Image (cartoon, rainbow, N blue to C red; front, side, top):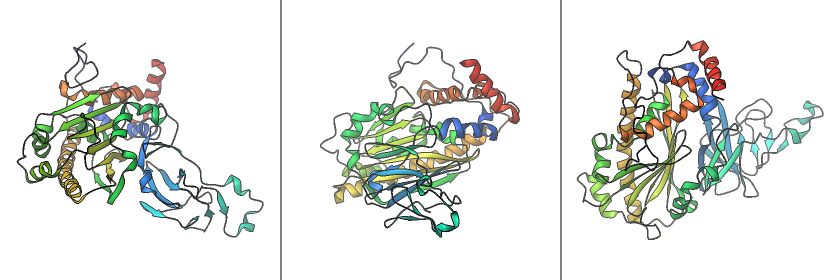
Length: 402
């Protein structure tokens, strides 16, 4: 075993450089297994407590048929519920975010819920006979907070509580004072790509492509970019900037205006940092603010890329301009990654595609695939099983592994 200079985990001397086989990127039956075993049973980030400053403020999070609403109650506590009226299942709130004045009123038949999710009353209550209101509150969803970021999990799963899982990130999140951030004027963004979600993650899970595919980032970082891999599906990437004036307009002016915040420790000062967690969440920090982004799978060949952006509470005019320039660099990088994701996903259906042949610099991609193989061992098969047999074969392989 050796330790690559870019990694904190040892890399086998003769590791298998193949990735997932192409069939795993377009199989509807496998996608159904991913829905249950990868997404709904793992923590998902839905927002930050600063998105909900006042009682009655809410935001929504939808994933694979499940609908969540996170709301601050009259007591100041943020809670998560299924966005589903207990009468006929209608959404009790609609949209990305909003505000309820004292109560939640279902728009279908007017059932009224308190801000803590309890049922205040049904419209024309005598028509329901002897109904016990205490049994018809909004159904809760497991929710935990990490330095203000709100995580939900639709079903119990293999990951521990969020504080334990993200403990390796704790000191850095404290240093960034992320609990104190505020939303930017337009915090939410999204775009939809005609690709499998894994193609997006494959691109984002390695920095080998940065020098050629991302001229803006290469101009910003130069060669000072590294990936660090931790246990339990966590990783960190860091790129230091400012050593050169910058050739592109955005980088040149960003280097001139950006200032490291005084309270940041040396390893974070003058750097852009990225903190990733399995299966598909990334927190991206610059001195000017933070965003999280993730892929929300919509189908085997359709994925929504989305996230939220936040700024420092004491933002100066100079810092606001630097944040805008950072956004321009990040916007170009995202567009470049989106095109790479499309090209990569297209190749999975080609008869000429044999498999990946991975560099040591793509160890993060390989590790992500390995984590998926543990949850869904059917992904180890080079040839696609019959669609109607994939679930049964996976269950047999899980049983044999125990």
